[in-house]
Length: 302
Image 1 (cartoon, rainbow, N blue to C red):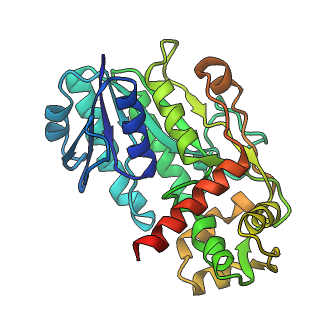
Image 2 (tube, helix red, strand yellow):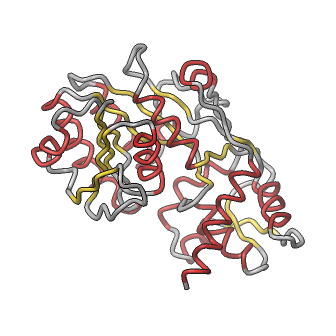
């Protein structure tokens, strides 16, 4: 049995902690407001990851610290660095490996498609630069580090452009507005598959200092909306492209610099993850059903 600390109690962090506990490991889930998990096998501790001494105390004896924390989207340049720095310092203090939950932003707008995990980062946005600096902070530490990079999420608890802009209209059976080319293929990561990849990466015994992509399913926005409509037993709604001005008017100013992700095909190469970690993508239908089950549970709770 090993000991793992999961930093961040969002949907991926909580699922990662649960999966590790199911394997029989000792697991601590920590965030500023950690709450609790259904399983008694995970101990939850409310703490601030930017406090390296506090996190090191929690992590004493840990095999790995899995950094799954998320900063508020509009505060990435100010809030993410202290979290990453605290995590790295804590890992160095206790001799733990670092497994980071990342994304595709650092590759930048000009990266070749499909994105490969060995591509040199070339961020073209503020958020991409933040992600790159975070990864560089970890990979240059004196402990082993690896990053698991996910694309846009589907699944329970996912908060993404799709869940914020498209899903509410789908559930109300209204026309959908979304940025980008509606017919460009796009990679979708399942929150549960992401957690599986993080767990597998924590057990990885090969060379560290590199990234793994979460295996994905590919579908255009139009195709994905059509599949959601079928799952909801209704006709596919009208789909209209949102402009940058309209995004800002809706209060999504922070999304404008990342709109390029939907302007052209976005595909990822996850061959290394499948071959070395043994993780494969769930079906798109499974991702959709899990996303809708989350909505149904929310309706029951109201």
